[in-house]
Length: 226
Image (cartoon, rainbow, N blue to C red; front, side, top):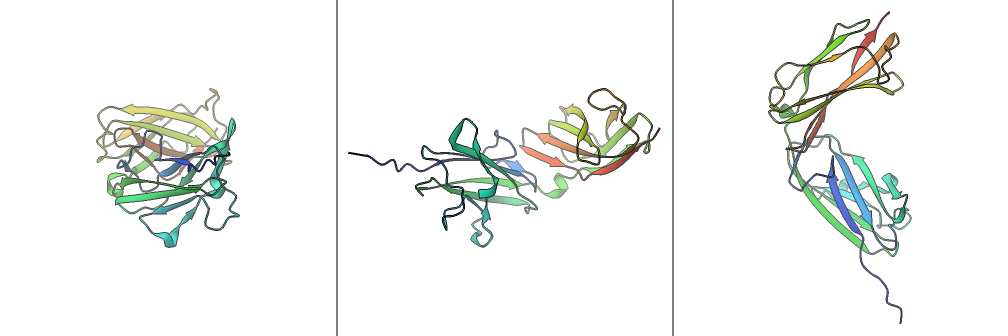
């Protein structure tokens, strides 16, 4: 006698990092991370009507997010895989997101997580500047974030105009970010070479593991001269 395995897929959902716990606080633009596994494999072809991998925010089925195209099978296990999808412009307050998926036998599974989006006023990187700019070597990046009084890690990335990151500057604060945070750059790339003359863009990202918040600034320009 053949016994058919009708166990549904296993779905794990997170926001920003795998350390996320349902009910955590996030910024208005978190990254949805989903891990899926099933002995038969996951149905992500999009050819079975109503059997897509989907995400629904706050029960709003009119704006169901189809995630099939973002799914990648694991290299060492074709029966499982993962996906990441950027959520954008979520309103402050409490939210839920429900993930649904099917295995190749179309057995369904659902899971949901809740989270709290912090108000923009609590998650705004302000007054981001580089001084001097233009510069021929050294410069200092400054910004303020007076209401983010948490232990944080800071990353300042510098990119060329092709989008390649040439330098990554790290900082850490155990007492919250002071009103005027400053990160110095010696004008050199990650290999230790002085950056070529030209236009570069830079961005600050702040991570709080205690609040599970990841926020980022807009991109700004800096000019390197001879």
